[in-house]
Image 1 (cartoon, helix red, strand yellow):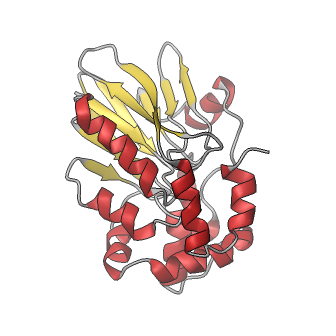
Image 2: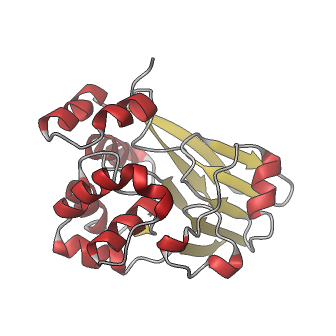
Image 3: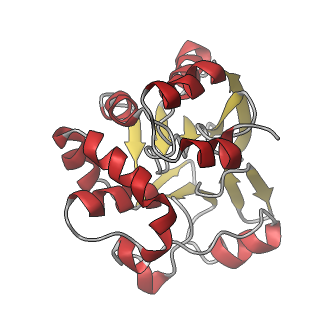
Length: 245
């Protein structure tokens, strides 16, 4: 069995479609795990969610942006440390359809699967045990650490799985020890390059194989949407996440 891992789409419909087209064209994938932050930063809120929720082969969890926007919509407040993105989050919240609000509310924070003696665990990022059920206002997701093996073992070493899949930190992570694989394919929708990454975990045999792939997409068409739709705080996001100096 092969499982595709995608994460941090961040409202980028064009990149998502490019990745799904490649997966569907010949990767022989039976299941797709989407590890949170489907929305925000990019403008394609309902477009991205409709694509994902309508595919029976996709399993999804929530990320910090998904949960922060849901919290706004439900009147439960907004995390203090997210104040710099509040204007953008409010804009996304107003565009989110009632159906997708209901769908997001039903998503878990973790995924688990066992195949051929290998256990997979999916989470948006590390959450300490006592915070696993904490509301997003309590900011349960761990502070982002540099992508090193030492940091991966610090965060995920005690997780009861052979392959830990996650996102949140946008660069690629792929570390392997004698006992565990730590995998973050990188943000599908947010980068300063012109490709969208995803990973394939091949569990066809006892020894799993993991490979990260990159798909080219029309980055300029995506960026044009920010101006067309007058996305709030787009200049800051361009500088921080999308355009090279």
